[in-house]
Image (tube, rainbow, N blue to C red):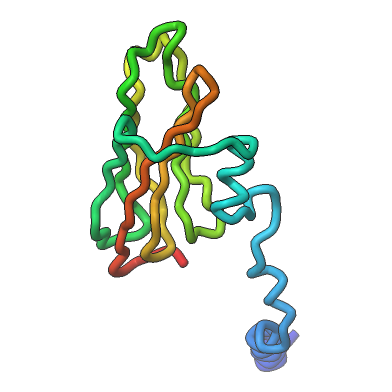
Length: 156
């Protein structure tokens, strides 16, 4: 194959790839699919089984009010709990209200953990609420919420 004909076919292939999204074929790839494509309400319902969630001062959610980089937003969650066999935190879930995948972190605890707290970094696709949902050993659900403003570098 000559160099000139190779370059022509390579250029034609590049033009075709450029036109595919404009023809609408690339739209299917952009759609969120799978079990993680949930709204905030659907994720909360999946976690709680439809039970009521109480916003409580026992749950402390710490995140920056303004995040300069939405790809790495530090989040800390702590819960006031004695962490005894009868009274302890079983689960902590961190959700981001407007991400395509609202579930950011799921942490499972036992009384052996000693304290109910953890820290992580999450990805935020823009300004939105971050919600921490906590399942207690008695089956109740507590929560805390904080709005985080993403200025640049959001993932969405």
